[in-house]
Length: 388
Image 1: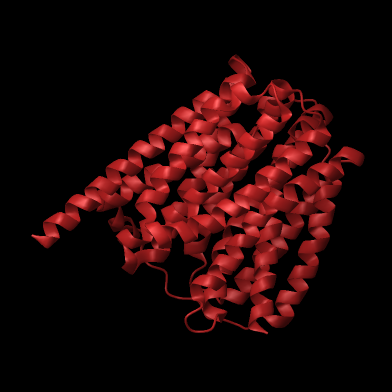
Image 2: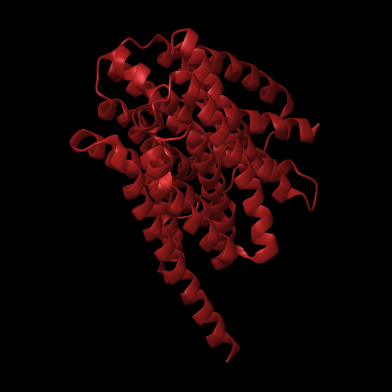
């Protein structure tokens, strides 16, 4: 029964991930329908990421003392309401409001659901249970986004949110019936949580998180107009491309955990970031061929999401006694990086051209690689001093 419940938690993660990422595939349709520019429509992703960070960090901390089943179900119920609001939206600001509601509830849900999975798991399988929930979020890239884009090809894009609302209702009812109660914990003072930031290795590692996702989001947030203008892709081809990108993102996320265990997080992070940057620099040169673009997206998706579990593994290893706090900062800063990426990408489009997103995103990933190298070097020096 606990295994079924963990899968239901993963389903919720899939729904929140789809709600977050699906806008990237239908951004042009939304812009035309709401009579706004692409860069303005792109701010739907910017404010989503910022609100998600708020939900993942601030709301998690402020609700920590309350019974977890109640908070989990409440977050799913609010998420359901956000989808209904998005479905009913007729203007830009109504849709923006729905995105903020979806983001805050989604950020709160994903953190609690991940911890719940660990709580429900059998001894020795907590990591696997947590990975199952996070995989549900990643699968939204593989299935949720391309399916949503495909739906928008034939019917109004708002129906994506209606389908998400119905799915969220079913998930809410099943979780309410199956999940056991779990008492909350005493919330740690914010000052105590901030003390871990005195670790310069951790700070540099968190800069890796920010610039890695910033470079990725600059391109991914505007992937539809990017592929449309750069490679002449139709909406059908964009849907296919998103499916391929999502599939290899899923492969990368699974491979990243394996690689971190097999070869260590240092080599995995360094290699994946280097490949990530290279694909963004070369995507312009592969745009003349449909196959070339798709192969580039395959490598890009795999390299990008290989970094994620390896970087999480590394950050936790720096402060193992405060792993939950470290992951909270990681999640929050990851979404701040997405906010910056969507905002910077929109600025590039507004003042230059969508074509420039690739190489500028590549530069951001190189900054992430530099931050990772600094953090890893400091850790190596610290280990050497301890041995002496």
